[in-house]
Length: 270
Ligand code: ADP
Ligand code: MG
Image (tube, rainbow, N blue to C red; front, top):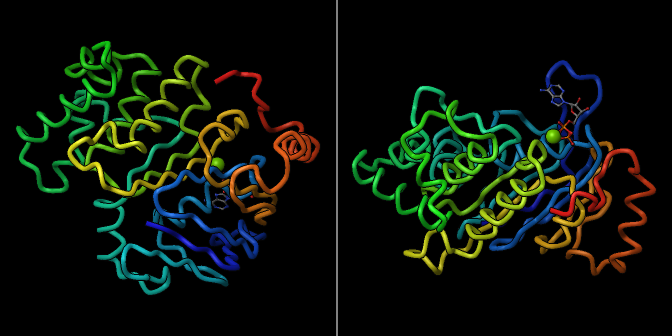
């Protein structure tokens, strides 16, 4: 599924300043688009609008969704929105937000159950997914534990699997590894790449999978992005094919100069 934002200005209710100002962005289908920018620049707002996470109305501009048919953000009904969120989209946020009284595997099974799969079938799929996601078996071993009984890195991997269990077309990941140490951050990146490549859902190899990733790590961005957008104070400063806009080093330098206190320029080695 592809998205096109054109001149989007968006203000939160009761907020003085718009969070997005005439932001424009193309998110192509079947690619990885990375959103970069300092804190407060509007990355999460942009992602939440694309992901239909709330009913906010745009002040200006439009967002179009192309899933075979073109849809306009402003015209999507409640039913369309709910269907897109439940069936076509998956979400990963900075914290895992697992349900604490459900086992890890039941957490992953939830979107399958909500999409109508009987619990036993959902559980089988989840077990296969856990094995594919981690051939070492470590993650599989956590399946019957509660989220409080596994590590932070494992929790976040469970959260990624919950986001992809129902074979969504689009995954929105908002700083999914910024709370993790480098080895666990690498595992999250790898899991997202495995989803994108279809390795986690081998029964549907032809599916076009679109990843929208908000991330603070330029090295990761450079490695995974097909497209990059850079936001600053609600504006999209750059939107283009990854790193061929200008030479990578030059580009990184510009970002370093602009946002020197906020971006991790690869020191973490993820
Ligand atoms: P980022 O994800 O890049 O850090 P956000 O999209 O969270 O930026 O925030 C963009 C702007 O919108 C900031 O000025 C922030 O304070 C404001 N903002 C974010 N969420 C809300 C909200 N729920 N209500 C009002 N203002 C918000
Ligand atoms: Mg944010």
